[in-house]
Image (cartoon, rainbow, N blue to C red; front, side, top):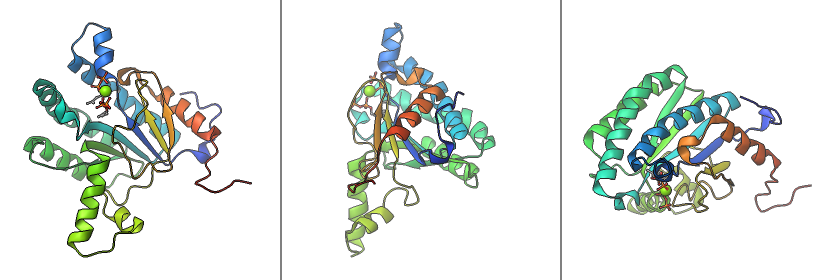
Amino acid sequence: MDLSGIDLNHVPAHVACVMDGNGRWAQQRGLKRTDGHSAGEEALLDAVHGALELGVSWLTVYAFSTENWRRPTDEVRFLMGFNESLLIRRRDELNDLDVRIRFIGRRDWRVPKRLLRRMDESIELTKDNRKLTLTIAFNYGGRAEIVDAVKTLTERGLPVTEASINKHLYDPEMPEVDLWVRTSGEMRTSNFMLWQAAYAELYFTDAYWPDFRRTHLADAVREFQDRDRRFGGLNN
Ligand code: IPE
Ligand code: IPE
Ligand code: MG
């Protein structure tokens, strides 16, 4: 991959990505929407390779939102099965790459038991890996995550502060998002990483997710390094 113009000492530690545009990618080719989801698998693996080459240590991807239950039953069913089989197909390869797989989202009754089992097996298999943490946001919603955290705090009689909410998010170890990417030209958050992306740099590309490759990730990092992050203060 062409890393020219990238300062490898200042790569974003945490990149979060909304993998969007699978349906439109497929429709453009006269294929079924679900073929677009299938084609997204290659993009995900390539993005992981890109993150490894760049030295990004946390990559979080949006695979299924709390709102995606509104899709037609057939598509929802496909996505459940697809994500399950993707884990079976790819977990050994990810394990060999020193990638630690994690999940964020609600583990409610709507998520099939067998998918939950594959998730748990993948977490267990890769738990000691250290090069990259790949977090898959599944049945994830940023609002639900904040509600769940605040509920736990109030149930336990704990004070509600930014620090205490941080500690009760789905993955308390997850650092804040530095670079937040969305494919397919849509410019909205769609409820992804609302809390963690408070000071993330946002990057949008017109590429549909199945066309996304590590070079797109490198482009996003180049742009990130041109930004002036002030966190509400003043630089210089
Ligand atoms: C993103 O692609 C994948 C999921 C939401 C699961 P879409 O399915 O949203 O594709 P478009 O946005 O309709 O093209
Ligand atoms: C966000 O994309 C969810 C995922 C990529 C998993 P959507 O396609 O569901 O978002 P909207 O409906 O365009 O906002
Ligand atoms: Mg979409």
